[in-house]
Image (tube, rainbow, N blue to C red):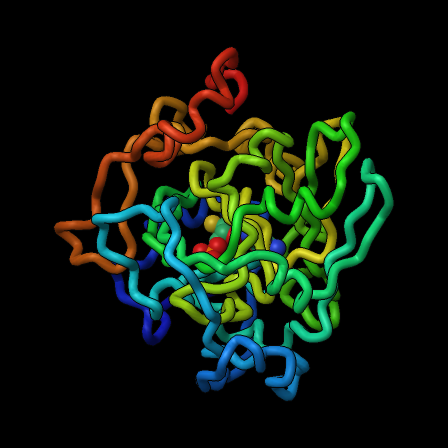
Length: 327
Ligand code: MTE
């Protein structure tokens, strides 16, 4: 059990104890290992050649990006350090500081993403093919966790819709499921929680096709650090962070709503939709406000915005739905 404040994590970034204990009632005590990452910059064209000892791409490898009209402006970015050391990635430990220490062994090369289910024909995409499928955009998004903290993150990626078009889903595909990498030998910490692995998340097709839904390869202009879901993850900015599956290896098109990790764990607490909604409290805490990680204590608290502030782009997806019922 963690007793003291871990080194390098500001007190401001620690989840309040009560909230932390609540969320962790599913999880057993964690232990931690250690791994260091390098920080060397290379051109995007060399990514495939720049392999780390654990067959990954070195953290710090630059990506070639273009500006995006879908970026959120005007808010102070959360520091690289906070974005990459305050993480939820339970395969690598249940404490926020653990993924940064433990995810060094995630083998991010070679890496493939399987496409299966209701598609014209099943396909497998290599990560380097995915990286070249569309121009990579810099997209600053607000990132709101169900635990009532938030960040502002400059992600790198392109709309998931670009990828979905290449998957050629059939007309009866109504949902898409994302499955994360799972190897209990690499992700030894996964046995410390009662989650059924692999981590699974899903979206309705129209949510997945919304231009804001980002197939994400990097942050701060560089490849994703392992702890943030290298080499490829989903980011859905108007939903709580747990909808954004990390390190995905399979994308499945379905006619029925897929099972999803946190909904399996506690369906009364974590709905399938999980849109950021200040009017629907979590059964054990309010969702009306959030703490912005990394700001001075007096400036952290802010009002949570409906759909995390992305209502103009996404509210119409839920026009006919009772969002108290479909939380
Ligand atoms: N994906 C996997 N595979 N495993 C996880 O534990 N945690 C989720 C989500 N994706 C998680 C995951 C949760 S709870 C959050 S808040 C975000 O990742 C955190 O993303 P970040 O660490 O990049 O901020």
